[in-house]
Every structure is written in structure tokens, then in C-alpha cells.
Length: 320
Ligand SMILES: Nc1ncnc2c1ncn2[C@@H]1O[C@H](COP(=O)(O)OP(=O)(O)O)[C@@H](O)[C@H]1O
Ligand SMILES: CC(C)(COP(=O)(O)O)[C@@H](O)C(=O)NCCC(=O)O
Image (cartoon, rainbow, N blue to C red; front, side, top):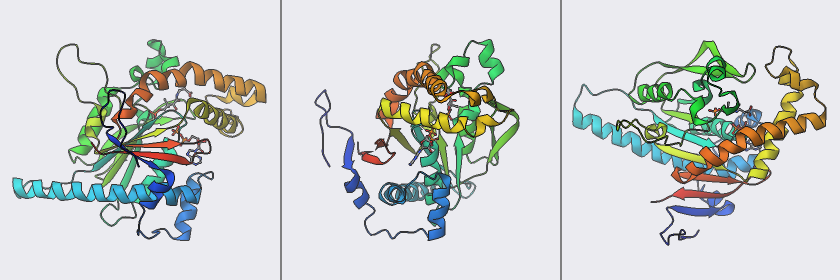
């Protein structure tokens, strides 16, 4: 652990842990998972190692369960103060941000499974922000098809309203769904969030602050609705490799279906597929990482820094 000064000589707001220091914070928490549950977790992603769950995600779920417990106590105190008609429930919302292909979905699903094991948070919901992408028809009209994932490609007011309604305790709240198979928002599908104890919101844009309002009327940030913000971090070269590897796996699986939006990629040779994936990465996702995603890292409460095999090498926890 260190207490570093930043370039301006100020105390860093983060406390940094090596992997082994972080793993030690699991302390005396017993391994809460039964063998079949471990198997189920690994079923989420066959590349996920059990050491990763034990060393990184168990301490994190222990920390989060303490934070959620405190927030629930505070909420009960407020209800008591305001009187009997103030009933209801306020879900604890966790945001998970980071680059395309860094592992946001995998981490979120592991956290969902682990947090649901704690007695005070049995109901853990998970949503991804891609449902709030503008439909392809709109993106095409606005010349934004090459900007998917950039701030301007989302229906931000709809996302803010969705989070507002959930935080306000409304039930159930419905949101749109994105299909990677169709590469578009699904017109007739919706996801339902019904007063969970915890909601995990995963996406590229979750820690962004947006542009300052021109008319002086401040609108909230997505992250204003979050109780805890996680950023998953890795070097650009590693991210590019993971993106290309995932593209190759999709070429050999989902893209094979003639109905898949990217079916044309399934007939590419290895070299052509590699070049296509790198070109999409460099022209869209890397630019977005540099311009819009990486600058949000400092806003996180927790940064998980990954090495080349997806193992978390270091953890930074906000203390100021
Ligand atoms: N903890 C992990 N261990 C091993 N592989 C992982 C892990 N997290 C992600 N991956 C792999 O990395 C790729 C990107 O992960 P994914 O969760 O889909 O990222 P994102 O949601 O950020 O785009 C996938 O191929 C996934 O299998
Ligand atoms: C759908 C995404 C924008 C991610 O959206 P998110 O859930 O993070 O809001 C991204 O995975 C994507 O498809 N980007 C477009 C470029 C590409 O095809 O990789």
C-alpha cells in the first residue's frame, strides 16, 4: 500500500493495493461458494479462473456488502425520520465502466452472483447501457454508424429517466434491449427491473460527465445515480488483443448464422478477419477509449487493473 502524491503534489485520492495485498483483505471471510456454485460461475466464462474469484472478487464482494449494509441502515434512518408513509425501497446502484473488451460483462456477472449470496442483498439485477444506444436507423440518418459507443450514439435522457425511476423505488421499470446478433436495438423487447436490492449498470459510458449545459440548466450525470463506481483498466495493446480474440471467436460461432448482422465476416480468412477486427478497434473503440472512456477513470471508487491474462494485478480504492 502506498500514499502517493499526484503531479500537483496532492495526496492521491486512492489507496493502492498489489494483488496479494488485496487478496489478503478477504481476511477471515469464509469461502461462501459451494463447488456447484463455483462451477456455475465458471460457466459464465470458461476463461475465468477460480483464483480470480477468490483473490479479487470475493474481497470486493465483501467490501460491497459492507457498503450496501451501511446504505440500507442510512435509508431506514431516513424513513424513520420522515414518518410512516415513507416506505419503499431504494436499490443500491453499482456502475461498471471501462473499454470495449476489458471484461465489464464478465466482472458484472461474477459480482451479481457473489453479491446475491449475502443475506441483506438477495436480489441483484444487471443491465447494460447498450439498450440505450440509438437505433441504427437514427444513427444512419445522423451519420453516426461509425460512432457506436461514443456519447452522441446514446439516448442519454432515456437512460437518465430509467435510472431515476429505479432509484426512486418505482416498480417495475422497463428498459430497452440491444442485440449484438442484429447489431441494433430490439424494437419489441424490453428488460424489467423490479426493485432489486442491488442494480449493476454496466457500460462504456457510465462514468461520463457529459458536456456542460449551454442553457445553464444542469442535467444529472448517469453516475449521479450510482452509489459505487468501478472502472476496469488494461493497457491499449492488451485490449486490442482481447478485442481481436473475441472477434475471431465470434467469426467461428455467432457470425456463422446467415441471419447475423455480421454474417459476411464468417467467410473471412484468418488474415482478413484479423485486419478487419484491428481496423474496427483502431478506428472506433480505441478512439472512444482515448477520448471518452479513459478520462473517466479518476472518477471511479475502485479501479481494477488487469494484466494480459485477465488477472487483476493491482487494485485502487478511493479513500478521499
Ligand atoms: N476475468 C476474466 N477472465 C478471463 N477472460 C475474461 C475475463 N473477463 C473477460 N474475459 C474475456 O475477455 C473478452 C471481453 O470480455 P467481456 O466481458 O465481453 O468484455 P466487455 O463487456 O468489457 O466488452 C471476452 O472474450 C471474455 O471471455
Ligand atoms: C455495443 C457497444 C457500443 C458497447 O455498448 P455498452 O453496453 O458499453 O453501452 C460496443 O460493444 C460496440 O458494438 N461498439 C461498436 C464497434 C464494434 O463493433 O466493436
